[in-house]
Amino acid sequence: MKQFAIYWIFLVWATAATAQTYPDYTEVWVNDYADLMTAQEEDLVREKLQELRDKRGIEFTVLTIPNMSDYGYSGEIEPFATGLFNQWGIGDATRNDGVLMLIARYDRVMRIELGSGYSTSKNDAMAAIIDDVMFPHFRSDDYAKGIDRGVVAVVKNLTGVYPGEFDISSPHRLWNGLNRWLDRIGDWIFIAYAFAAGLAYRFYRRWKRNRPRNCPIDGQEMQRYSEENEDKYLKGGQRTEERLKSVDYDVWHCANCDHITIEAYKALFSKYGACRSCNYKTLEADSSVVTPATTSSTGLRRVDYHCKNCDDRYHAHETIPKVSKSSSSSSGGSSFGGGSSSGGGASGSW
Image (cartoon, rainbow, N blue to C red; front, side, top):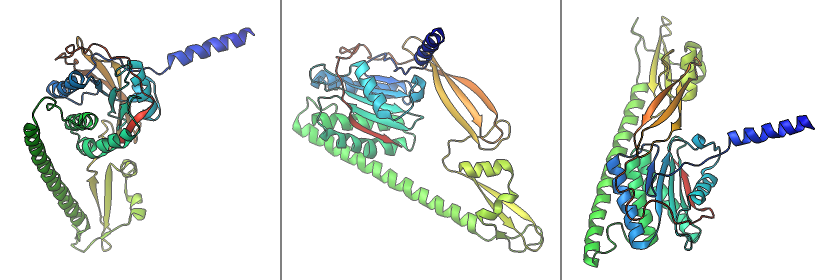
């Protein structure tokens, strides 16, 4: 019986020690713990959220975090977002009209969580905003623009009015709408140009890889080995790079003199960096917040590195800048109104 009691106490202690938590907020508008925006970019978003609360009474907050695992959570983002929403109490307690935009940077997932006062018809609209408005910018690492555009789209969907246009005349709104249309045309031109440039580069890279090779020893034409037959000519680290898709290798063979040429092609986008020990692109990084930043002090983030090739492991610490104080306490922005969510909204992964 005594042993059982000791075991039970230990189990409760261990569970408490690893229990899930939620981040605290330093203001009700923007808590950018993943450092996705500059102070000026935060201010632009903050102004829109303050205006929404002032003009329509809707509490809309933006939260960015590095990983959900920093708070002891492992799983889908939906339960985490709903629990966080309800713990913070976002939105009016009677209308339950709050909105949470949660972005987990290194998990590469986000969610727009809606208060229980919204109908389920809003879920599809939030999904479209995530996929069509925000993710095109996220995929090019322009998180600040994606967040700002997403906030604008959510405000328009919920109120029928764009930020900054609550009190202006109809002709003025039409003029602003024309400017937005021209701005979107400019974005599409840039996207089309970037797509064409990317396509041209892909064709050039393919041509460069497939063009005939002459042996540097005897000048004879070389043959390229298939993927199945090239591994025996690659080093262990090179095979690991291919497995991780951080680098792809071509092996060319001269049948006349048996000369071998190995060419490396780095992936355009890869989460793996070069290892300090073996120098292969097999180094994976995982970050966690040690001390969150506040308006009065910087925070501390730990980055753990692990090489998938040589198994070298080490860590480093990074300073998280202070949270901007700008306008954070104005317009009743010190606490939320006690609202709740029943899990409505939409999620996405980029």
